[in-house]
Structures are given as structure tokens and as C-alpha cells.
Image (cartoon, rainbow, N blue to C red; front, side, top):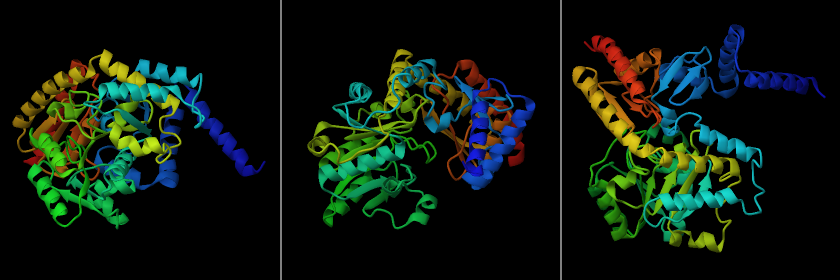
Length: 449
């Protein structure tokens, strides 16, 4: 054995021993912070250190454990999680039923053979068909949101035989090549141009703009395969469209023979007060994309779900689209438990009630500090606070972090910050967040003059 490998064995065992520890000494805590920063600097990406420091938090903060609606850093400081991993922790951190399902499955089998029928994938697909709106029937499981969007785009082309798509400005659908072509942030797109051709972007919230683009494409013989939208834009700053927007887009897609793909990666699984955000508008998409909270905040899993006729070519050739780890038994176990928890604990309704309370309190603070806060908007527990400028938004996010509340802006600024706590957040925790935000806003308002 080489000296290099001997060192790797020794170091990896050190990490395993650390993982197994219930409590750390002060010396060990200091070592974890120092070693984490060095590892990110030398082996992950040193840009993350400055990014974390400049966007919302002190980069030396190292998270260590979590439970319910809170997480704790390595030094034991507890934070109320109002970010929720950008919508991952809908049933809370490490929900006992989700953890139990994962452990039970791990004790029997972790990954499937790829050749035999794996039962949990079938069970989960059946549950999805039962809870999704309309006649959505077949599900394909993946590992992330961007993969679910990639699959939806491929299936739209496969079914329609068309090549063009309509997406929206400020939309975010992921960063792999197809989903990035639908995403509308220049900072993410520019280094990778040219992207996949045939994507047209129109202003979000304007059904008229979509109609004009559909007409223009049809006029030049470039028929559109699908319109892809977020029911509420997340990365765009929690932008809620007019109530008639999605119904009108549904009608336009039917008129022009285009599919409607709804990206519910962030809005799905109870986040907005319904199991799926499109249910607020009585709209059924042709393809529905899921991820983030789908794995119960424990395992990474996504899916896209569609009607039977869109699946026909895959029925003829079931390996036309495939994945090695998508829909593996452990992730499916987590997703099954997640659905059970969401429904048995009535979390979509709790999100509606908690969101109404939270938005009301936040609007009171907005009225109290008009030189800092421009607008509060949202639906359920998907809430956005827009500030007068990026600097004030950053100051609020940093102040909240110092006071034990985690929030975050968008990927590239803090002019709008998102409030997306676990749907299990208690009223007491909500009041603590409001109290601490009031305290921070009072300080920041003096900065604003």
C-alpha cells in the first residue's frame, strides 16, 4: 500500500469517527471549522467562501445538526430555518417517519439491481398518480429538479414532434443544458452560450405575451412544443402572477397544440397552501415537475409526471430515457413517507394558515419601515420580501442571521429575500421571527435614513 493511500485511510477514518460522535469538544469544534474552510478553499471552490460572506452569512459558520424547524451550527447556536433549503424541508428537518422509512429500507436494500422490478418505485408512482391533479398518470423519477425539467423538455419534443419552447423572463428551471436554456438569468447563461436553440422568453405574468409569441412562431412555421412556467417564480423573487394567468395560458396551449409544463420543483408538496400550486387556479398541466421537498428533506429525489398519451413512445421503448440512481429504493421510501406525513399532518392546510398569519405580520412591518421594505408578497409559506435596494436587503439578511434566523436572497442579490420555513413551523417560532425581524429593521432603517 502506498503512503498516499495509508494517509487517505487514516484521514477518512478520522472523518468517520467525527460523524459517529454525539458531542464534540471545543478543540474538535474549532478543528471542524478550520478544516471545513480549508477544504472548501482548496478542494471545493474558494468562491463559495466569499459568496457566502457577501450574500447573507458569515462564511465561517458551519452547520452541524438539525431537527424540526431549526438547525444548529457546530458551536451549538440554534437558528430558526426560514430558508428551508430553498423549499426542501416542507415536513421539517429529519422528520421521524421519513427517517424511519429510510433506515428500514437501508436495512433491507439500498439500491436496486437495474434489471428486476423494484416495488417502491411502482408504489410511489401510484401514489403520485393519486395526489396529482387531473389525469396525470405516469411518473419518471430522477435525482434533482434540473433533471426533472430536462425530462419534461425531452418528452414534450418526443410527443409533439416540435422543437421550440416558450419560457419566461426571471424564470429559473435549473442549470443543466436544457433547463438552463429555459432559465432566464444572463449571469448563468452567458458562460455557456450557445445553448439549445428554440427557446423564446416572454415577460412573466402576461398571457398576452405568450399568445403573441405562439402566434409569431406559428406564422413562421416554428410551432411550439411546450410552454414552461413556474406557477410562482421562486428564484425570480417570489413573483405571484395574476389569478387569470395560468388558466389563460392553459387555454392558449390547447388552442395552439402546445403542451403546458409546470415547474413545481419549489412550489409543490404543500408549500403554497395546496399540495400543488396549480390547484389554486384549477389548472392541470400536461407535465408536472417535482423535486426539492419531494424527498421529505432527507433524500434527493425528483420526478416528472404526465398523461398516458405523452408516455406512449416510452411504453414502446422503456429505455429511451433512463437513469441509474433515479427512483432508487431508499429515495422512494423517503418520498412515500413524505407524502404520508404531508397528508396525515394536513401540512398544506397548515401552510395556508401559517402563511396568511406570517404575510399579515410581515406587511405590518413593511408599513412600519417603508424606507426599507418595498413589498411583501407570496402564497402559503412561499413568501418574498422586497427591499428598496440590494444593500438594505443584505443588511436585513445578515442581521437576521446574527439573531438566529436563516433567510436568503436570490442567487445573485439580496434585494428580495425569501421566507420559506418548514411547513411545521410553530406559531411561537413565527412570532420569534417577526420579533427579531422588527429588531433588525429598526437598526437597518437608521442606515436608510
